Image (tube, rainbow, N blue to C red; front, side):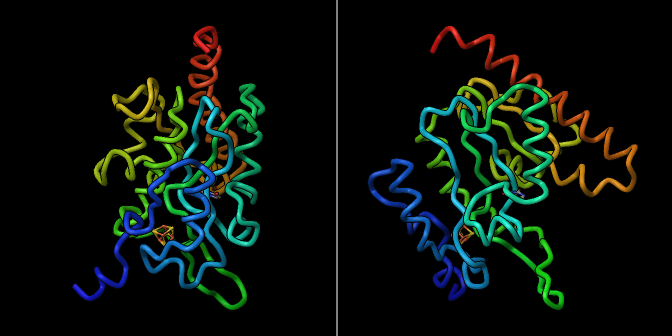
Length: 217
Ligand code: URA
Ligand code: SF4
């Protein structure tokens, strides 16, 4: 009980007026779960409310935590390459994470990525929901298990559902795929190429949807 009161979840920090700028500002002082304690800063989503596609990652990494911006480190490099390959511009996208503070394990001077706990993902979900309500995208892309489970619950399996349109009121097209860092974690060059190609395949569905539905804008 005491722990629940100490870390009440993000809901307690959401502002009345929920525009992207007011949400971003409020998130800077979020203490909804314990992750804010050791992280450098909140890494809120980046992009405009006009974005037609929202990409959701897991959580900031070491570089994102320092820069205060999502997907600017090694996983961001893979993400950018995959977007370029399918012709989606990052500046037309809103890019965010399921969890807004960096969760890590100190190892000497390094800070090793630590998967956020389900309770932390749940605690942070109100920010993501508010971002989605503010942007109301045509396409929502969930990059990896944490993002997908934040929306669809802990039993959701990316391996089974990836690349398929998912039913959700959050956007006309909702799709899950692997996280760009899965490409980096692949054990050898051949499997890295295969993982990257599979990410690109899934993103082609997104690019096609955006092109096909461009006329309604
Ligand atoms: N991985 C993520 O999920 N998000 C980032 O912003 C960076 C790495
Ligand atoms: Fe708030 Fe999310 Fe940071 Fe936890 S991770 S303190 S819920 S912004």
